[in-house]
Image 1 (cartoon, rainbow, N blue to C red):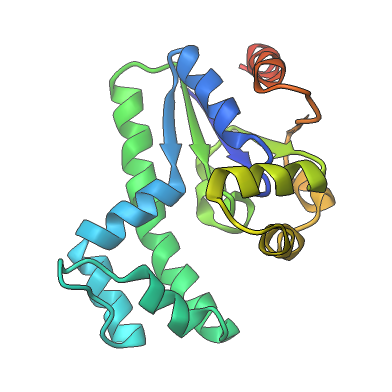
Image 2: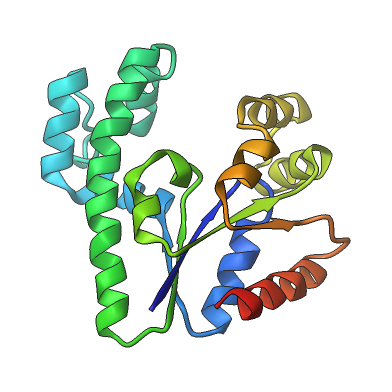
Amino acid sequence: MTVIGITGPTGAGKTTLLREVEKLGGGVIDCDAVYHELLKRDTALQDRLEQAFGPLRDETGAIDRKKLGAVVFHDAEKLETLNAIAWEAVVARTRALVEEYRRQGSALAAIDAIALLECPIKELCQLKIAVLAPQEVRVRRIMAREGISQDYAWARVKAQKPDEYFIQSCDYTLINDCETAEEFARKAWALLEESS
């Protein structure tokens, strides 16, 4: 089974590439979704986070992400601690999901992880694909998708790593400069056909 790691900044088009993997019959693992699910259900992870950062659970017993964010996002050391704890749990769950796809006989699986290149998940991947798009395009997409202001969207885009970081660290780069999502989907399909 070929495991592809997909990374790149927000709003670039990673989801479109993932849909093309699904059309090819491949399995898809969204590391953000894995992390959010673990925050709700993984009591070992919840306990570790509370040991590190104090009480964080909401009335349902899940980790309150806003409360956690308020603790870590203005403190680089705490954010680093959070990343270490979270990545350990996410890597273990992602590894289990890859094995599940392998047992099911999938020929292809894709892992979507914005921090793919900084964490051990990259070791699970035979190929790494960077999905990039011009900043102004990403800003428009983020605003439309999340209903946020242009200033906030630009702040998020500017806070992310530069394109060169992704280009230098990945096997393939897919530039989403297409006029339509359908056009980019065709471009993504062609890359998957070439690389798998």
